Image 1 (spheres, rainbow, N blue to C red):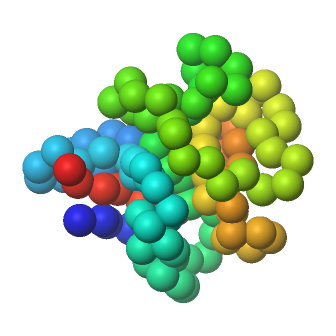
Image 2 (cartoon, rainbow, N blue to C red):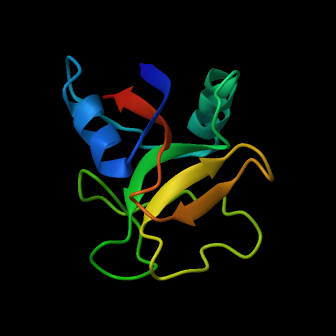
Length: 116
């Protein structure tokens, strides 16, 4: 199950909102190309150019981990990304490429939750 919210929140706010939903709901964890493809149609109509996913590189720069502590194994980076060690949170870039980008976690954008 996936839940998409088009309102703008920081990465930490989005994580908290996802975890407040019923069940084992987290800021989205995308494990493979099939899940990535299933998520994309949910983003139609968002006022933002990006959507928060649940990965970060807080512990070690460019070592991306999901909020449950497991490593990210599926990547679909935009060309030239990740490019900034100060951008520690993962977004799905809707406007330019339809791929992952690293962003400053205090930015505000839409977010996607998933339940496992």
